[in-house]
Length: 334
Image (cartoon, rainbow, N blue to C red; front, side, top):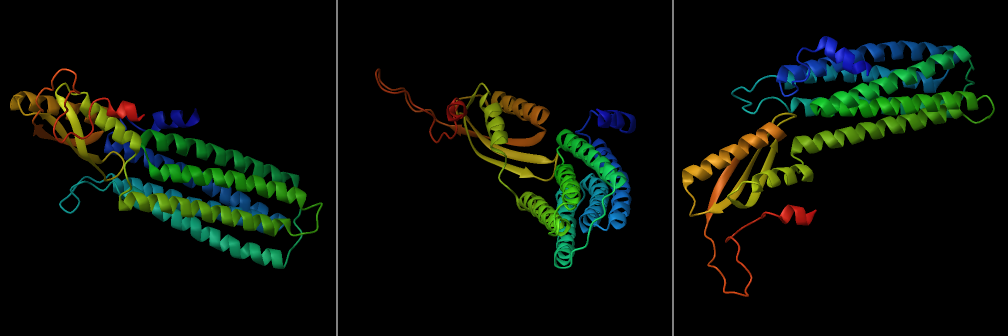
């Protein structure tokens, strides 16, 4: 894969994605690649659109110009989110990445509105679109570039868990589909009388606006504090319950301060008869195991509970008083 070769060439210690400086390097690299690709696409599509007098192609060009702005936001977001904690932000600046995603969404939505207006004007006063094989060839080439941009942003988004890159990947795929629709419309426009070009511009604008809305919704949810992923909850509870002396867990709270900056707390129920030093050592080991495997800084609070007296033969065995989630409950739920 080309992006892996580029990452290996330009990012030192590229495998250590838990390191803030490495995450920043990934973000800056993806932003710079986006700026270069979108600049080429904007110039190419604008020239083609003006030459064949197509509002759909010109709209697509300015969509790429907005993507260039999104790439700039990606670079600044990577720089700002990697800043270390300070007095005013003790948990770091990781949520700058969510703010950057929101800014990308606003840019995308604004461009969609502008294209919507231009498309309506073209529908009201349609003009013939010139057919040119060279121009169509350039548009096909732009689709290939956008597909590659989708691929590398999706890859980087997965590697560093970046909402910005996932948003840009989604937008790149939308751009590829929109340009494909423009090509189909340009060819179809030669054989029909109704304003295909303007209608395609209208469809593209609605697609762009929907993409912007979806990205904004995801970013706002993260900024406001969306519920944690159920799979993450299961993983944390399962790892705590694997402790030899842990009888149940409850009151799990997860705080997301940005990718790689997740903290959590949970109550673990243990027998009141255990030696406090031994159980504290076991809890410390569980906390470290969760940090190593899930990248979450977790605090486990020990809840000593009394075991109910043994039942007489034939009666059901007792459980811990006040127990929450107990060993086996998660597997049963699944």
